[in-house]
Length: 300
Image 1 (cartoon, rainbow, N blue to C red):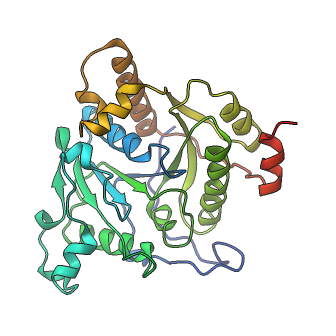
Image 2 (cartoon, helix red, strand yellow):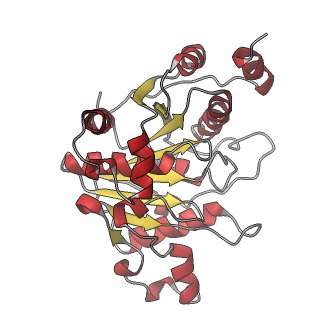
């Protein structure tokens, strides 16, 4: 299946969610040439680790990759760059938000194996909107023509926040993948994220691509839930201590040696990247109501 990059804005006929006030993107800022993936999941589930290693896997397939961190703590790309790079919002503030004064090298940094890294950052706690930051970041990238030579863009999105602001990357994405563990809280968050993606799918081209089981020995509860709501597991990454150590060492898993268990995880990332590049079928998942999922995952 080939992923068709049709980014023609859909005619807006209804809001993205009943009673909601959403951040809407200017069609002129939409990404048009790269394959764009957004990575969501419960806070602390390993989205940044997953995103960074997936970026490296794409780069090892010969793709030109840009990873955009969408978290105020701006740690999405530090295993790629080996440091906390300045955020777009901080750099814009430094020039009094005169974006014309910025150069690409002010906010785009090269990481491991040539992956280009951007940290969008966020407004101060309790103020502003994360969607504005994402929009400004994409606008800068387009103004500096940095997307013209990019094959893959990965948005690594803050926690399980699915408000209009932090759902903004969905407006730019072709497929969204959800990182989850084999436990109640992760699956509950995944269910709500699916609902957010389906809401955005009413007016934008994003579709659910599937889920990634992370930090999990087993996947029985994940698979049980996925079968009922119409999701598909794309990859399974075990609860391997080397993955935890890679964050402490500020390194990707592709830099963590050649022990058999590490090579197995590297190969899983390479397989996942090849699968996503080839194209995954859009999933028409049907999220459960909160009470339904509570009863579904509960035990008597």
